[in-house]
Length: 74
Image (cartoon, rainbow, N blue to C red; front, side, top):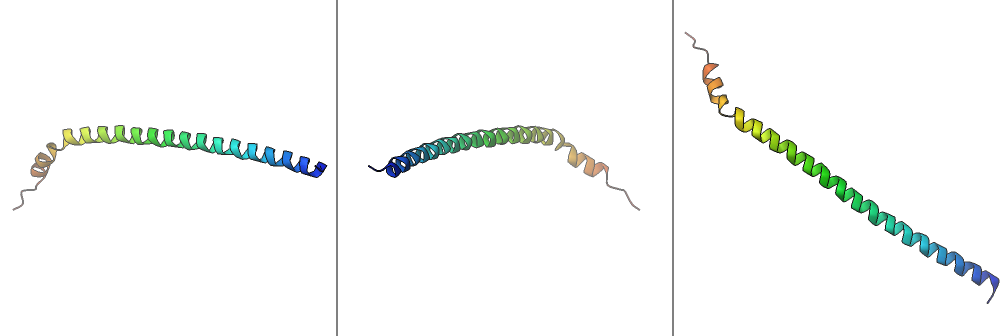
């Protein structure tokens, strides 16, 4: 075998190792992105739950405010 072939085979092996490492990092980053998006969704659900509770409390007051706010014009 020629020395060039040995060198090129070594470069090829290192290239394969680097590609495998990059694919592993890509999988890790993809998992981290999924976790982040899940936490954002959970936070949004909590906020919507609080807003729904506040709306449920104040919704019965709307008709009273509407009736009380009508001007009796003559």
